[in-house]
Each structure stands twice: as structure tokens, then as C-alpha cells.
Length: 487
Ligand code: NDP
Image (cartoon, rainbow, N blue to C red; front, top):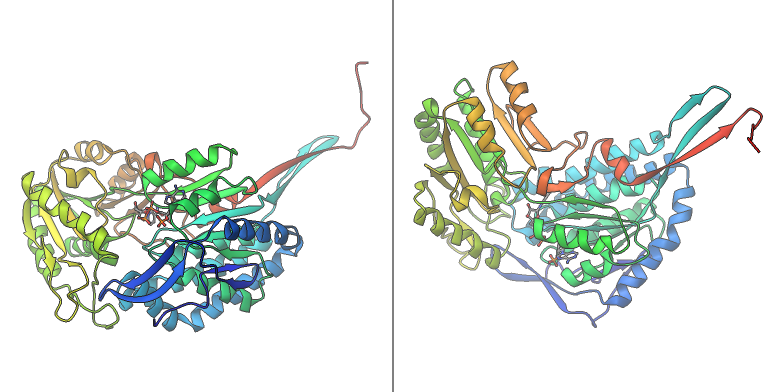
């Protein structure tokens, strides 16, 4: 097996194997080749990982913040040095094309570690003057944090959770998705090489039940999940048992609104990026593309031509632009949506079926698909598909499109294309979403707070905002005068 890790788990600075847990495998989605065989953690490994994180936390928190930051920045450098190998591993684990993983996965994780490594020494409380007395606040770590990841950006998600948690003096137990278990283990050994003390970052593998064991553990002070809305609800309910705070990065059905005065080529480019990058398996995707009726025919003809030019193939081939979906099971759900769309009356512009890629018959590739004449009540306009399926909806005026864009239980992201500056800001202010773009789509630099509202989530990752979700503020009142008591 070409990507077999040293062991399934990484606990207290060591790779740990236990064959007691359920078997868990990783396959290369393009070929079905078994690339690694691991085991799920049992309660023994879960308890050991949490105990290690708990034991390591006070000393880690007591380190000078600048020293914690230096270790994170060293890890970022190692990731960049190993980017080629890490990207190939991520491609094998997820099926995403190397063209993407080389620039968007490990590298964005490195950016995050570098950013929070720099921020670590600048996390401070406040000083509040009260005349003869004053208050100061301390920003303190929470303790043992649990990170649980989805399968679409395994390395990036691990870094987005570990970097702010560790920078602020917490320790972490991370559980990757059972579908993509490999790069989190690499991250753990890179941290060790960078000088991270044992127990500060631990990885346990497993399915939902391992996630549940972590989220209900009494020694856990914080949970950060990236996953679907139903899982988010389950995690929040489990966390309620111990009143453990949660950050939830969940799904979406985001609108991308293209006004008649847009630079149409840029808008088409953004719509493509917003639907077909990572085979459409991105939470922030702008899957409801609202196009002003006057530019719709031209938009669709440009869109069709560029969509049909997308190259599908072996993800490890640097020329491939789109790979298979992450698993046959997930792909079959996406294929079902294509049937439903046609049945409900959407017009197929291009794609609409499984794609055959010679030599890769075991992988499930889906043609990049565009539907037009989509109406708000259609299933494909309401449900998160998580595949390469774009819905184009016509609109006539601004207030109408805002109301329709907001008519969803989700609120993760949104985009607006227009050359009217005033309209751009007016519309983003009116949209229900946590992460928005004007004249671009799907860029998430680490400096930008990231997250959703409504059922798309709670809390923010990245940016200085993330610090608030991994620390607690302790207030200290300091008396400098004489105490006057009424008794
Ligand atoms: P899931 O919700 O199925 O799983 C997410 C993680 O939670 C996995 O590690 C999963 O383990 C774990 N899990 C499942 N059940 C439980 C439980 N009861 N308690 C604790 N953990 C549990 O999501 P997917 O992996 O299928 O990812 C796709 C979803 O993630 C989409 O909805 C997408 O929108 C969302 N997402 C959100 C992002 C954001 O930042 N907002 C970014 C990326 C994706 P296992 O895999 O073993 O089942």
C-alpha cells in the first residue's frame, strides 16, 4: 500500500497502533486502489489522547507565546519544503487534482500556521481605567480542544483548527474524516519535527462514534467541527452535556449574484471556480448562480464553452483540472440530484451524467454540469449537493434577488458581481451570509475571518476573530484606594 502511515493514531508524540477498533481504509478515488489500511480508535486511544493533551497543556500554555509561535512557524516552513509530497498524498486520499492540492491544501495550512505563529505573541487582554481602581483582562487558553474534520480539505482543516488553538496555549486532539485519514498524521509528525512538545497535538482516527466519544468527554474544553449541518446539530447536542463551547463550520447553498453591469468574463470565471473547483466539493460554493435576465443568454453561452473545456483525468497528472468525487457512495448521491433536476424541469445546458475516463473505470467522475431555468422551489436550488452541479437562476431586479438569495436555512457565503460600487456594498449588507465576496468568489486567505450564519455554523475560523473562539477572557478588578463598607 503506497501511502500506509506508520500507525493509525498519533498520541503523546508517538505513532500508536491498536487493532481493536473497526478497520478503516483509504482508497485512491480515481482507481479504487487501496492506499492505506488503518483502525478506528477505541475508547482506550480516545482516553489516552485526551489524557496526553490534558497533561501537556499547562506547560505548553506557560511557554512564552513567542516561543509557541516560533514552533508553529517552523512547522509552516517544513510543510512548504514538503509541499510536493504532501500534495501528492492529499491527491491520493481525496482524488482532488494535483494542480489544486499543490496550491490550495498544504500551502494554505502553512499560511495559517505562519499567521497564528506570528499572532501568538500579540494576544493580549485589556486595561480598563476606573479612577482609583482599574480592571485588566487576561486572554487565557481553554484547555484541551477537539478538532473534527471533513474530507474535502483534510490538511487545511487540521491546520485551520490547530494553528489558533495551539498559538493561544491550548492542546488538541484531532479526528480527521474516516474517508481521508492520512495528512493529519503527517501534520502531527511535522509538528514533532518542528519541536512541538509531546501531547500538544494528537490524532485519533475513527467514524462518527469516535467523534461522539471525543465530543462528550468531560475533559474537553472546546470542540471545533467542520462537517454537514446534521452532524453539526448532533455535535452541538453532545457538547451541551458538558456545556462545551463549539465552533461549527457547516454546509451551505450559497448565492452568487451577477448583475447586468458585471464584467461577464470574470463573472463566468468566478461561477466556474464557485462550482467546479475540487469537483464542487467545497462548502462555500456559489451553487445558486443568479444572473440578470438581460445578460443571461450571453452568460450561458460563455459558461457552456468554458465548462466543456474542463479536462477530467487522473488527478496525479498535472494537466488534469477535475478529478473524481471522493467516493462512489458520495458520487451516487450527486448523480441522483442530476435525475431529480431533470424530473423537476430544469434545463440541462451541459454535462448531466457520469463521465468515462479511459483507464480509470473504478473512479466516479461526474461531468461538470450546468442547469438553467432553475426555480427557487427545485430540489437542486435548495439542497447542498457537494458535487460539480451549477444551478443558474434568472432574476430581474435587486430587491427580488436579495429576497430570493436569502430564502434558505443556510448562510455560509455569498458573492456579488457588479461594476456599481454603491450597489455592491448595499447588496452584501443585505445578504444573510458570514463570508462574502464582491467581484470574486471562494478566496479564503487566512487573514479573513471565515464562517457562516443561520444553519451554516457558529463562530469564526481564521483572522484575529479566531482567537476569541480559542480563549476565554478573565477579568481582574484591582483596587488602589481604601475600601468603604456600609457595615
Ligand atoms: P460529515 O458531517 O459527514 O462529517 C464531518 C466529520 O464529523 C467527520 O470527521 C465525521 O466522521 C464526524 N462525525 C460524524 N458524526 C459525528 C458525531 N456524531 N459526533 C462527532 N463527529 C461526528 O461531513 P463530511 O465529512 O461528509 O463533509 C461534507 C460536509 O462538510 C458538507 O456539508 C460541507 O458543506 C461541510 N463543510 C463545511 C466547511 C465549512 O468550513 N463551513 C468546509 C468543508 C466542508 P466520519 O467521517 O468518520 O463520519
